Image (cartoon, rainbow, N blue to C red):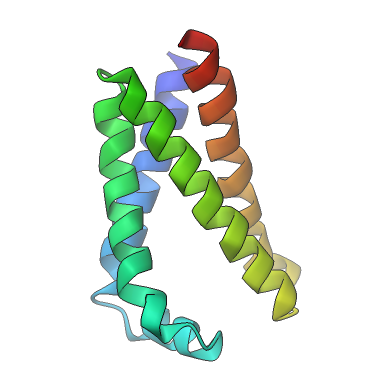
Length: 114
């Protein structure tokens, strides 16, 4: 049950965060600040797909593995960008947290039950 809650928490977070890119000026301005505005739509779509993939991954195990690995990589890159920009700890921690959360889902839930 705990693992399902972790998966749902990550899935809902990424689904909402991905959708918010399309409606939030501040999200778009962040990508502009990073000089990555051309990747904003792609990132939002990948987050939405990753969140949906985690949900369906509760029934189709391969989707859980694929989605959690993809979201881990996305957050790994996001964490790297935050470090490169020398953002504050408060701005950097969410990407680090979600990176570790999806690594946990990938390795301990996904691969160990494969």
